[in-house]
Length: 294
Image (cartoon, rainbow, N blue to C red):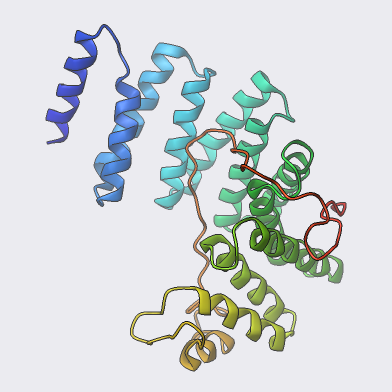
């Protein structure tokens, strides 16, 4: 089926005098990945990158987009080492073409930082994420979703890589900013708001602030779909799930059994989009959202 679809598309493109096979391959790879055909999806993405590099060169914008798309796939497949190599290549290409402060460059730096965070390299991810946060605040604004996502990643990196009190306080402050910003931009029940609310609860639990952590986790769980086999209601999260989380989930790490982090990765290699309307600085709880990073 895959070969027939590819052959049919190539025939149409040749009849039209065009050659956009890599774009078609990337689209088909997305469909295959969604349906669980990961091996065929990876083959198509690698083929698309080879075609882009041979036709356009390694530094062309379309090549870099394809590079990021393959890196994103490899990250989801837990092939962190090769994904890191591709993200570093993409970041280098964008820095040379657009400069270090361009939104596309910053987005790539943030994705590389997020990958290193996912690969349990928080010390390496911290400077990249800090760079992304500072750049996004300057170019997109402090309440842009890309800024808020990078804030959450940076807070997690600080919390996991450093044990000093200053780092813990900064991590808490950044995560609170991220959660409050997402509540304003997306609303209380958006999946990203709920995800970072759980992250904040986990961070506070690690600092011994279990009462507030309990409350935040209840808030997050009440807006999320019920856990399988638990029968949660909308207003009252199940005590089984809360107890499991607060006791560390039976030896699988603090709270990870019921509250595992599911990083949202919709990376297509393109720069972050601006939302239709952005609130002014200081709109959240009357505080300035441009607090300087340490």
